[in-house]
Image (cartoon, rainbow, N blue to C red; front, side, top):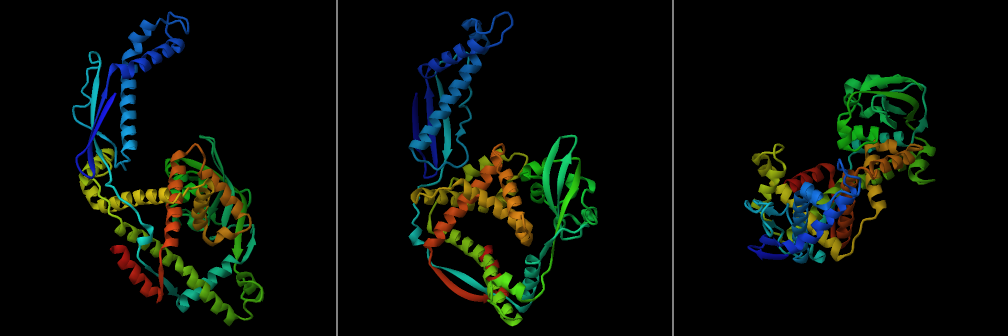
Length: 447
């Protein structure tokens, strides 16, 4: 077998793969012998089918499979040897697969390869970035105190459910044998379906169309233990049997509450408590500041690294793989974001390789758990919720759903690389109001 790779530009190349009879004949003959040992052919005992007969029945399809496999392996080897950051998939030339499989002994395949141009990443060259410290308003302080009163309230199990409760129970569908120990937050249920979940008691049973309860597939996925894609496929009537109702009654503003929120004797009266909460709120608001900072780090990284991509090649590839799902106009509108994402993926991979950054299983689990905690909000702190969240996370990473696992792995990978980069970047801090921060963030995201 021979290969010839020619770069025609910094982002495109032509690859020719020549497969001779000597390359595929041994593996084809081996496959035919294996078929002869296992084939079930009428008139012959298993393992005693004559090889010429097998060759006549399956020889051509085995030949095609082996030649294509050898050619594909050759393409992958060239990509590896040339250290190409491939974009899309190798594209065969129009006449590359116009083959007479009955007559030809030797085969030639030609491909166009699209790839990113060569680049390097110097993490120490990223310029200083401003991180904003957000000062909350009085209204925001009071709203946060109300949230804290709920978060540090008393966890009770009322006899009858009300809005805001989480209802735990058995979710099942008899026709499909579906079963899941579910937790349904009533404040996540659609407005027109909420009445079904109000006034329920332990051991009550309700039935509903599974797609009528939640606004999004993500919320339905959490309630059913399914991925977003699997949740969208659920159909029909489901049964829910109430086992437990969980409710938090808001705490009172007293010393016990101050100690629970801040720690023993950190605030001796309401005034001290409010001031310390103000500082905590400012820190919490900085999650938005952190999000903007993350965005600016990635933006600065992209600006500091020059990567060319085969844009026309990529557009053709994306239109082909999304045929019927996206138009040329859709692609043109989304293309800048697509290019940004591809470049960022290449840069992350290079940073991870250069600095030996690896993702462990626990990183992926924590990524899922973080998402689930965000879904339940303040209720994630209820007694027993962490165990419930842990079980849900492991369910999401069920080994049978490789696509779901891959999605969370990529998120964990991106987060780990970003955290590494943030340690390398110099930060300039500036205090601003919430309103001013929103103005700055809006301008930054637009650019």
